[in-house]
Length: 133
Image 1 (cartoon, rainbow, N blue to C red):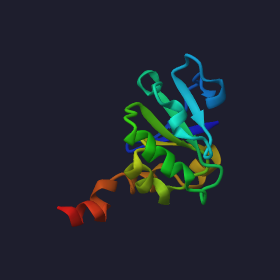
Image 2 (tube, rainbow, N blue to C red):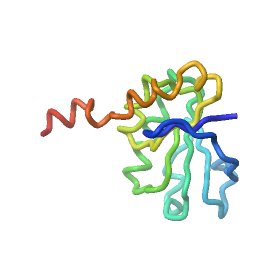
Image 3 (cartoon, rainbow, N blue to C red):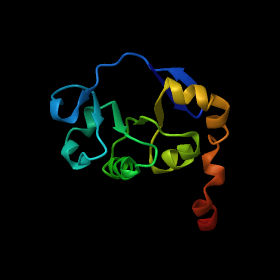
Image 4 (tube, rainbow, N blue to C red):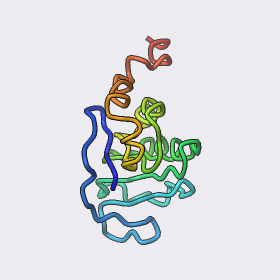
């Protein structure tokens, strides 16, 4: 099982029909690996409602770049980090364009919702935006 983390806390992940990039035809939800090229979704972003990008380990940051590129390409749907990310990464996830994370139950048990919500005020702690102001 997995838990979805957003700025408002934890919710149980619902069952969804999500396919891998290689199997994408007319579905509205896709899983990307951390090695997939987001430009493969060019021309399909308008009908996608959910993209999950895999983090195989919390110390593998390639998904951050993919998320940012998808937002720069114009993707406006839900974007979730998928895998063992940790609460300390939540502010960075939000800054690059993720709407939240879908984490394993074990991580949710080890890092409860209050640890994630502490970082939910990520715009207030975004030093680059404060420097630009």
